[in-house]
Image (cartoon, rainbow, N blue to C red; front, side, top):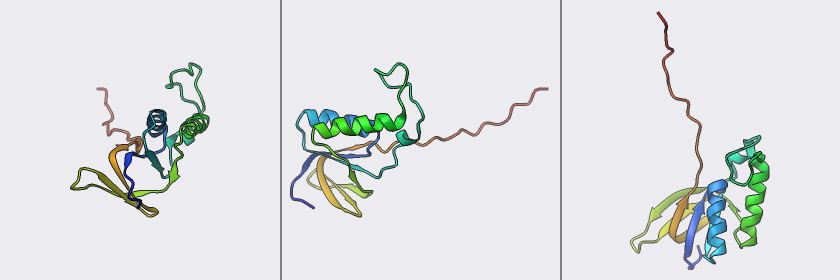
Length: 126
């Protein structure tokens, strides 16, 4: 672990995490993005939920573009898994994983979503 404290640690390198990385990078914040590499964007054939792409964009292409844009501002995802996150007595956060540990003033969790189908009883018509 470095003695340096990040302004923000972003955990998750999908659309939300990379968008945050772009903004923070543009505003010269000291930020690190940690990503396990399982963004659901890799599995989306075409999304139509992204402003500026009215005809949609393929998920892998959007992921690539977001990664390139974040890199322009000095933020490149580090491939790793965060296994523990805790708040320290000094108010900072400590994240620990298989590849190291990182301290930050703030943490942004952008770890994605899972599709969960609700349990619905089959309706019966009389």
